[in-house]
Image (cartoon, rainbow, N blue to C red; front, side, top):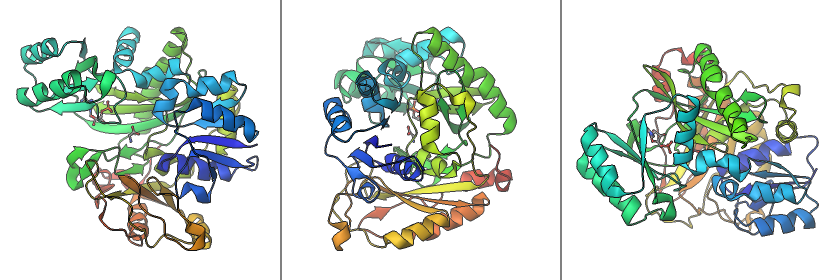
Length: 441
Ligand code: AMP
Ligand code: GLY
């Protein structure tokens, strides 16, 4: 089967590396891909949101199966357009992707169906939002732009001044364009965060191994929010009892309610959960694999990914078992200094494994996924150069979390580029939890 993967980050590299292992995979194409993905797939020029280009390539390269991976093309309906053109596709319809595309939709949906989440109000006027926050007098106050905002649309305001500044930026200065026409103001939830990715065909829900993202830029959870600086999986706080509770009170009700809304969800449904004293609550839904959660979790998947993705699209997920290796995984993101604010790029990357060495490393459970690396004449001996904030995601699998962490930092230590920066404490919080040596799923 010829496969087209839409997207070009570390998550898409993890998907492509996994698809490549499938006995049924023929040629794999990526639009747009990146410098590192070019080793594993044929990269095709075009923005991930360019549905016309995707359709053209699907025809030209006799694509049998497409994977629409990032949020933007999903919310814009690229998966719908591919399906309408007769291309079997993994990824939700635009109607289903609204769970991520509109926080207002997601919150109203959860309220309507009794799915546990933070209390909230919706505003289309910044003065009213501010008056509400003032009347509540409860800080921190959580303010969320309704639409997609490159992962930057959530502000945890510590006081009135921060809330006022956030509302001005989002609703008046329109820092995220129309995404800030409405905001959700919600209750701050205390607890531990857990990410659970699930495969669902709208009938069956198959959770992947749980994980813990590290969103802050610096060690000790300091600094601004990023797309994610590292992940460990499984998340030791997510016990089998919690998994059963989440399935019963959150995962299955979400999928069933989406059917009731006439928006059946087929694809990867991401549950961002807060484990609170009052039980698990939904912090956010995403309509896709997390990035970098995918880079930590997909290497643990034992079942053939192409088989799973086809079963999702064909609504046969109940017929297959989705199995994982009982190992621990740790992923560290190597970023450009300055990220998530401005940074410099174009620096050569040293210490990347050559193709043969890479194969050996992967057999040992060490993976280097490329997020922001530029196209270059890599094969002809020219080094790859940096081209993004998050440059590489290095993942290691081992029997337990302490070993996975040691292994991933050894592997990351081989790689160098100017201004390179990474967190040195990925997994520390999970280890402190105590039973990290006994991974739970
Ligand atoms: P979101 O994009 O909705 O996931 O928000 C980004 C991050 O902000 C989350 O991963 C949480 O760390 C934090 N966050 C969002 N909503 C809340 C909330 N109601 N209470 C506490 N933290 C939150
Ligand atoms: N790592 C968080 C996300 O993908 O949304």
